[in-house]
Amino acid sequence: MVFSILGIAAISSVLAIISNNSIDRIPRNQSIIKPEPYCRSCATAFTWKDQIPILSYLMHKGKCPYCGAKIPTRNFFIEIGEFAWVSIFVLKFGWSYEAIIVLLFGISLIAIIAIEYENRVMSDLILLIMLMLSVIFLLAYRQSEFPNALLGMVIGAGVMAVYNFMKIAGKTVVRFDYSEIKLGAVLGLFFGGFGIILCIFLAWFIGAILGSVKIKFFKKDHRDAIPEFPTILAIAGIITVLFNTELTQFYIALMR
Ligand SMILES: [Zn+2]
Image (cartoon, rainbow, N blue to C red; front, side, top):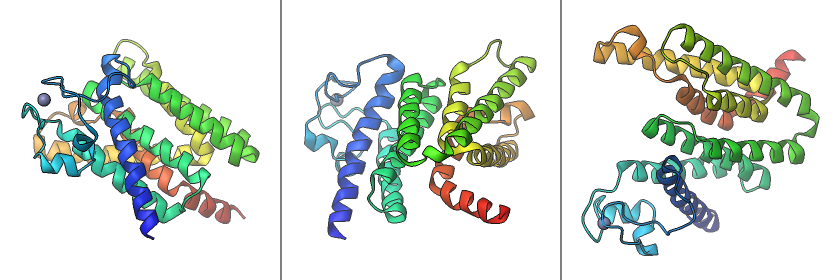
């Protein structure tokens, strides 16, 4: 029990530091590895003491300990979010290699959402990491489901392609965003045919709720009120990561 808590703290800390660093640097085309994490304002390199997730942020009241510049609140949210994610995961799936792959897939989705939310770009690097995780997951644990995974990939890519056609037809954009199609494809590959349909349905449902909440409170016109679908799809992906197995089993049980 104690070891599990220590393990969760250690893993989520490392993942939070890597995530925040990646979310900061990938959209700026900077190296993730060098230099060490530093303050964006005074450029002082942070020591390990300044980087303890959640605690360091609270101790310094969200400010750089050297110059007092504000550290983005997002860092703190990622630290809390990933701690919660790892905790839920270990409680649900225990410690196994299989669970770790799925856990990392979820962490990648968190990074995708944060980067998309802050910069309005989808990170191809993180999509590539997700592709790698999907392939490892399939080859190691789901070899019999290979055709289903390919079907999921086609469905996911297809839905995002249709979404892009609709955007072009609606004149909100002028060209295809291939990264969005890649996101659909990689989610489909990971979840399989049934999982991706579930994920898309969930995204549509979340989008409808967010859309109506926005209309109600911000009095915007209809089109403005609809949040970016790829971000919502990634959020739905996180939920699907947690419950895919149950839902697939439920589905199989229904089919019997
Ligand atoms: Zn500073």
